[in-house]
Image 1: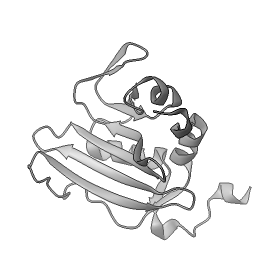
Image 2: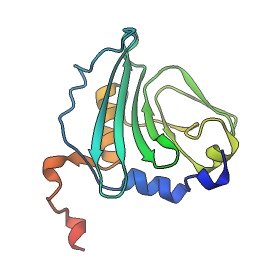
Image 3: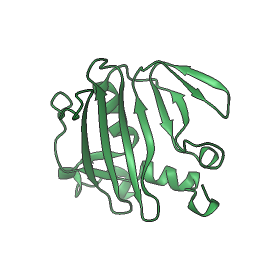
Image 4: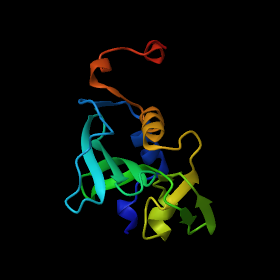
Length: 162
């Protein structure tokens, strides 16, 4: 990947933390089945003033603990890029550059370092504390990536007045 296409860590943080809104309700129990029947999967567009983002949720039908909830950013030159991904327990994950292994649920975060030195820009992961299943991960995901219901878009938060 060329240096001109690298997303800086600060940009990645801004994408993750900017206010985003979802227009439709999400029912984790009724997502459409993939054509091969291996996954339930759904994409949701987000409203965001600064970035073009969406959520992708995928869950293995045979192993419900094997799931991903992904914040995808659409870059004008590179297309869709997974910025942060909450994974369920699909076994272990290896952070190749640090040569460390994480067992159980984990959260992938795109980093400059992994863009420069790995074939997987979001290959770095940290252990997930705070969820064990898809529903718990989804609640934490919404909080961590600052997603609210679109009906709250014109509602001011306390920090908006400071």
